[in-house]
Image 1 (tube, rainbow, N blue to C red):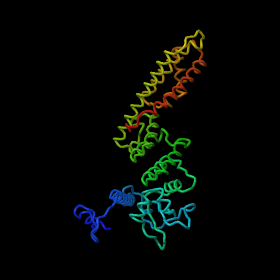
Image 2 (cartoon, rainbow, N blue to C red; image 1 turned 90 degrees about the vertical axis):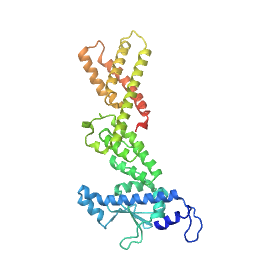
Image 3 (cartoon, rainbow, N blue to C red; image 1 turned 45 degrees about the vertical axis):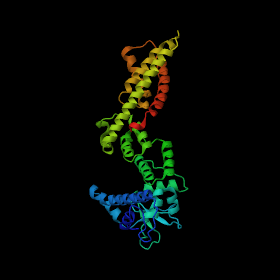
Image 4 (cartoon, rainbow, N blue to C red; image 1 turned 90 degrees about the horizontal axis):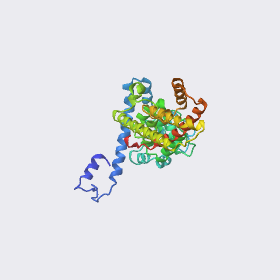
Length: 357
C-alpha cells in the first residue's frame, strides 16, 4: 500500500476501511509504524555514511562507500545455501540465511516483511542488504547468532560497537551472550585509561550495564580537565554531570564505610599485654585514617587500599615520628586490614544506585 493510499484509508470516516471493498480493516498500527520508523532510521544512517567523508576529509572512506565492488568474507559465511547477502560499510559480503537473522532479530524480520532487501547486483540472484556496520562488527555479531563459538573483540571500542549493533537490531540473546563474555574477559576491557571514553560512548547509546562498569573504572582517575583530556569530547554535558554525581555518591559511601569500620574496630579491639597485640589498636586507627585521606579524590577501592601506597606511607610515618614497634609487625597488621577493607569497599561501591547515571 502506498503512503497516499494509506492516508486515504485511515481518513475514511475515522475508521480503517478498505477503499476497494469497503470492509473495515484491523491493522496492528503500532507494529506498522514501528517498522516504518526503523526503515526511515536505516535510510538516514545510510545517508549519514555517504556524507561522512565530506566532513572528515577521508577520500579513502568516500571511495569505499561509493565503490560497487565488494569482497566475500569467506568461511564460514560463504555457504552455497545462503539466501541473503549483508554487506558491511567497508564492502565485505556475508552470505547468510534469512531464517537465522529473522529468528535472532525482530528488526531483520520486519526488514524482510516490510522494506525488503535490494535485488541482486551484477547478475546475482541473492538479495543484498547494505548495513552501516563494518566487517569486524558484523563478523562478531553473526558469530553470536549462528551455532558457532562466540567471541568478542579485544579492543574496547570494537566491543562497544558490537553491543551497540546488538541493541540496534534487538538481538537480545546475542546481547546477553556478548555481555557475559565481556564480564569474563581477562584482562578486563574496562580499564582506567579508557574509562572516560567508554563511559561517554556507552551513555550515548544507552548501554546501561556498560555505563556502570565504565563509571566504576573512572573512580581510579581524577575528574578534571587535565585527567580527562581529549576523552571529554565523547561525553555530553548531561552525562558528565551524572558522572560527577555518581562519583560524589561513591566518595560518600566509601568514607562512611571506612568510618564505620574504624568505629567498630575501636570498640571490639581486645586488650592484651603482648607487644604485637598492644600495637594493633594504634596501627588499625592509622590504617583507617590513611584510607579516609585517599578516598577524597579517587574513591576507587583499588586505589584507596593500594598495598604500595600503604607501605610507602607507613615508612614515611616511621621516618617522621619514629616507632617502638617493628616494621615487620606493623606491615603485617596493615596488610590484614587492607585486604579486608578492600573487599568491603568493593561491595559497598557496587550498592551505589545507578539511578544517578
